[in-house]
Each structure stands twice: as C-alpha cells, then as structure tokens.
Length: 159
Image (cartoon, rainbow, N blue to C red):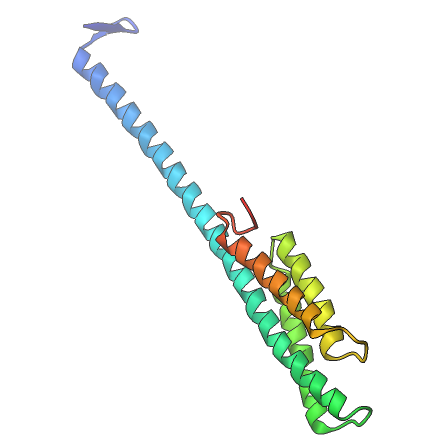
C-alpha cells in the first residue's frame, strides 16, 4: 500500500490514476501534433494554389500580350476596335497576374515573374528590339522557379 497525504490508497488506485494521467497526456500531445500537421498542410496547399494561379495568369498574359502586340504592329498609330479590345484583355490579364502575384510567398518566383513580365512587354509590344529568345529565356526561368517552389516541401522554394 502507498500512503498519500496521510491516508492509505491501494496500489491499484494509484496505478489507475497514473495510467489516466499518461493517457490524457498522450491524447493532448497527439492532438497538438495532428493540429500542427493539418495547419502545415493547409499552408502548403495555399502556397501551392497561389503558385499555380500565378503560372496560369502569366500564361494568359503572355497570350494577350502576343495578340495585342501583333495588332499594334499591324496597325501602328491607327486606333481601331480590335486593338482596343485586345488592349482591354491585355490590361485585365496584367491585373490578374498582379493580384495573383501578391499571394506568392516565394521571392524567387516573384522575381522571375517580374523579370519575365518586363521582357515580355518589351518583346511583344515595344518597338525596341528584344529578341524572342530573351523573352523565352525569362519564361523558362519563371516556370523553373515556380516548378522548384511547387516541388519543395514548404511550397516556397528549395528546402
């Protein structure tokens, strides 16, 4: 028998009490671990969705840049409905990319998107001579950076 605070308590009661305390502690620590894992999973999915959204938005912008640039070069200085509509689609795509980019945590991906966007704007629209290979190289860098971030465990680049 064990004496607890001046009274005698059978060993079976003490053993049951210890088992209950241990079971409670295991349950609490288990729940904390599950909650932490779920939180990390939700954060990863949020980061992954943001990266995929940026990639899709960049592709859409690329298509509208090409369309708008072709119309501007085909009709220089001549406003027309087709060019105006293409400009609106280009502006909307550029805005969608900016919004999507604001959700991305991986700074390498953000930098790659910004570099591509600048090169693409010059390559597709400007009269300046920026080769298509430069735009393509930036496009490949953008997709590589996003791909690396998507493949990382954290969703924010190489682990």
